Length: 176
Image 1: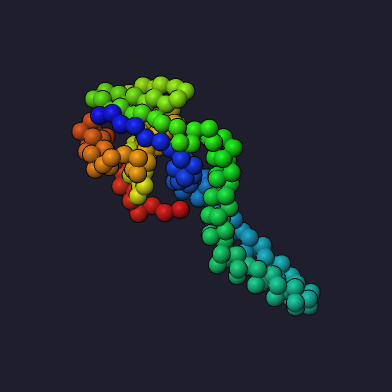
Image 2: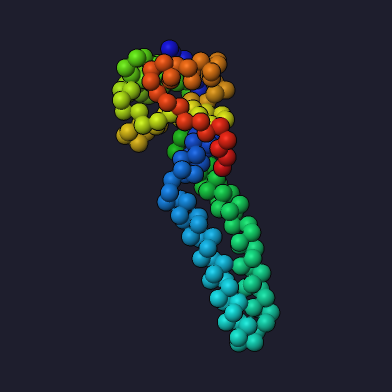
């Protein structure tokens, strides 16, 4: 099976966010900050209260509560902004460029404006399906991003993966 597609900035961004959401280091960083910041501000509130600077104690207590409530949204926004900037700087020349993928019984062949590649099926770690994309993760750390909107029928692609023995991880409910 051979098909062509184009990758846009949104596709790169969603892939980066998907990868970050699955990275245990990023998750630990988010959890650590979400716990340590309110603790630090709570300690400052207690010391301020003990030194009878009540307005400062209230300020730090409110700050701790705000962080507990809104830090996950802030963290998501900050990472999304960071990745969007990174993608704009590093991948801008690839936006909208045609790419071709061919799936055979032994290999996945890829071809774009600057390179051609041949990946053994045995080197594919997994295939994930999100609402908008298929991600093919290769053992070397590289991945193929396949936007569903660019493929004629994503059902056929999923069936093709099954035909060659690749299990597709269902991540249709994934959200950043």
